[in-house]
Length: 112
Length: 118
Image (cartoon, rainbow over all chains, first blue to last red; front, side):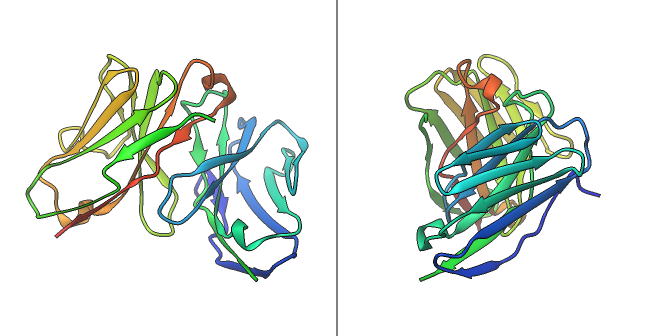
């Protein structure tokens, strides 16, 4: 079993839809949770960063962490074609950037 | 955020040759740099971690004699794929972090290098 599981998709939604992306994990020691966005043939860029359980909102993006269920989500409201990318979740035990464990990524396409 | 560049963006080489990929942090001092490999529709697989001035730490299963990593300065790390073979064809991505970012778990990624070995 992988430490971090993420549905690879692909996921296609119409413009304006609410998108829900999810990851589950097995290591209960993870405390820091991140979402990265990766456009085709580019390196990932950090989108959201959260610590422990709870919600964090940034514009159209909301990150949610449920440590009791070992489940994290990223919601995208009013999705745009420019949101089309692969979204990777990442986790860390210590908070150190030296120790990130990535999910496999979910490929999202937002259709105009 | 900080900027990391990678060069070249794409390289095609013949089997048996060596290829060098450069990773530079442009506006911060990268005390730690990471090299990842990514196959299509798969996640980033960490290959090695390098701290400036030290030998790289390789992940299990990664041949250190095949993937030579040098981190000679606070802004530059290089990955050399020696005697490349078709199975080494992949997308190689570097990332970097520094003192200001490391406690925020933040790594800054380069744009990646597509290596194709014929």
